[in-house]
Length: 451
Image (spheres, rainbow, N blue to C red):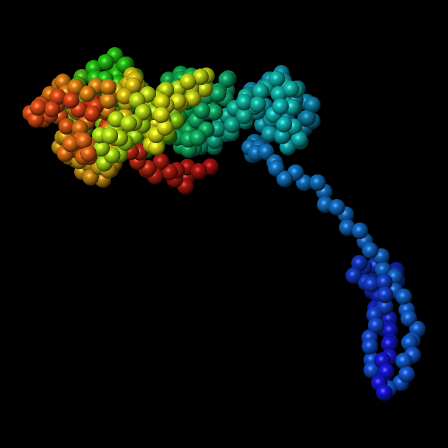
């Protein structure tokens, strides 16, 4: 008869140099038993106890999961490296030295646990000003590294942080050209901001009228083109348009740009190049391309209900007639609910539009009553009309009507063509034609422009 025999095996201990066994949390406090089958009666042998010490694991140190963004620290000037935190705070508090010299002390204090509010409390420098100083110093360093004229760089030694901060989004090459233009023209903060915006925006305007006449490399041409675009938003002739063109002429750098602006001032540009929407009679309906981000940058906007070209007369009559802002926040309130809305910049043709404004979306521009260009078949358009002005008055005016009666699609017709058919009333007078934004990639920075 088989009977189990229980044997114990003495566990193996690893010894250190002082012949003391190592403790391990993996060793059990009980001996290891191995079961053998034999014919002898079961006789348990002597057991050996094994002691093991469990080493408690130390808890991980506290880690702050969220760390606020801190700009990479600029090298601290040699005269400040040996100073402790109180001494650095004193320098910032008393503005000891030039602004770009003590600006690197701010990120060094961040590394020691200070925050913008605590620095403001100790030095009186607000969080906004701290950011402006740090970023301005970094922009100045990039000007030095790009071998900008030392005299130009030195022009920003006194109160230049605000100016350099405005050109922070430009590439290294653009910063150098912009800094020179700012110094030569003695621009203020607002001027530097407009200049940086114009230089950043210029490549996106490819395809606009006279775009090729302005040089992208020259900051003055970029700014001049921005003023030129603003002039086209005003009536011709008007004092606002003339003032904008004169500002464009003052800052233009290339002779080609100056020549194009002079033609606009003299009226030759309009005679030489017929604008989109111009009819044989010389009457013009503004055709404007909506730019990316133009609504966000506009100081005033217009909210209009939108109808589709196939909706018919019933829909355009049912669309809300009034939509305006109310309260301190300008909350937009409409007289009734509607499915489709569009927000447009406060261009002059639509800014004074009160009740009755509406936008009609067409799949392409072939509904317009003038000679079709190539883009007419490629782009959708919005036609803005005034439903409060239904009478067909001028032969050279443009009016919104329906084809084949009240249930037909919408179309834009000349006043002369409607009068020939004895039509005296329309759905609304056309004020503006809007083309969609066009996404360009021409403003991408090249590899050498990245810092």
